[in-house]
Image 1 (cartoon, rainbow, N blue to C red):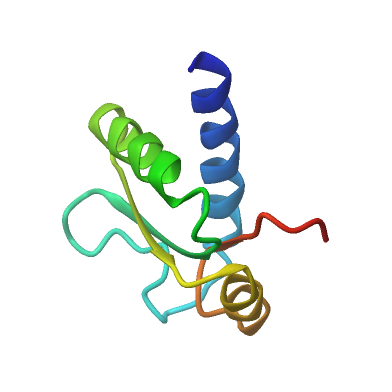
Image 2: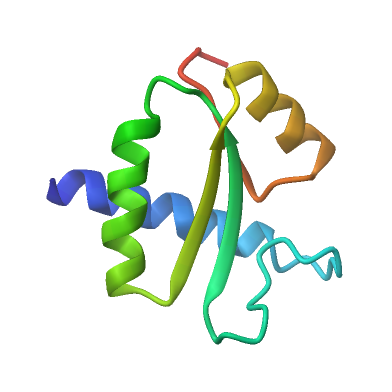
Length: 93
């Protein structure tokens, strides 16, 4: 569990760094609550564990993760289009 939380932490830090590129679209913004919101999309298979990790992480850190399990292809597409802060796939890239 510790390794999983560490991996999630690294993912969120990288996503947060990418989301601070000066966009005003609202992705990765605080939204007036003092909490950073990260938006992600992708693979459906790991969604149950991602949900658990994001829930635990948001209780310990001022970060909210909004993840939509739309499939690996959709996550890759949205990441390329820049409509999400991170994409997830269970297929090798």
